[in-house]
Length: 429
Image (cartoon, rainbow, N blue to C red):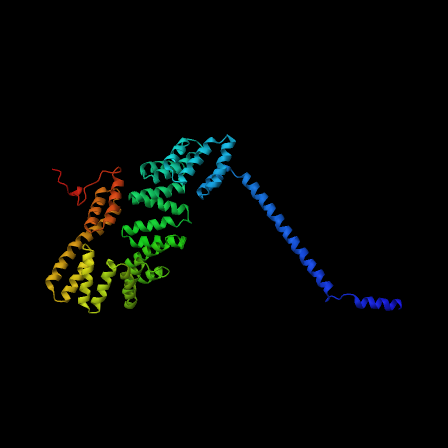
């Protein structure tokens, strides 16, 4: 065979680009790329770990420890505490850190022992006083808590945690004007915090200032719609919107909420107000299935029966309402109407008389809310509100106003409640 023939034969046996040898080379190349990628990731991870270790070494161990306590990572805080102790140079910092950890675990008196030891330390005083205020608050010692937190504000007027805990303390005592001040400061200083506006909404709602309350609830939800108690916030907002005759807004507010008793009652009231009686009946059925003595549901059910001309059935429902809630004005008023429509005038007159008596108490109670707002340090007004709340069979509201009066006792000598002589008309002879 000639040399040219041998060359041609070898060429015919050489693998083409579509033959297995080429595939094998492609597979090898892919494996090589995977190995390189894996090595790159390993090196990157190692470098990142080294950087994190370097960063942690550069961080002030004391500040890192306090941050760990704040996020309740006490295991990390203990490591930093051991580091501070081993250095032998940071006794005061270690003492404050121990106090912070004890406070976080709920050991309030031992925490105070540690924290008060460094309360006069030049560099640690502010941090110690913030924690001392929190400890006294948890122990129910509001005078001591407020004293510590006000010391913080005298040196750091924008200390948001001091404002936050002062707001909680004043609210617990019913000193709502002081609570309002610190809640607003907290909200201004921390625009991401949804809690101040929720509490502001509750305060305004208690004073029956529904427009202000609704605006605060809306702001709270704007800041964090998915907050832990979002159902309660939406239900409270919907009540305010209903009081303001914003029925469609209230239904939209309640749309994402599960059908709890409270939610379903407000939903039924708004549906009825908008003329959607079938939906209102459906919502009422869900309420009364869970709570047969629910006042608002009974009154609304009786009202619908009256509108439909089913007066005897309405009488039965209103009687159930007045028996379960003998101090409610609307239930007695509606029952008086139903008796009158049945021709039972004597019974109607008797119920109307009871309703009028309750209405006078209720009117004074409502009017005094504005007086209490205008006179934030008047103890007698708050005591009168507590007495009226008891008369209206609302022990929950009575407790609110009694606590408010108790909080004010050290602050002012109360003036007698009632009309006062006009100094310009006084006879000076």
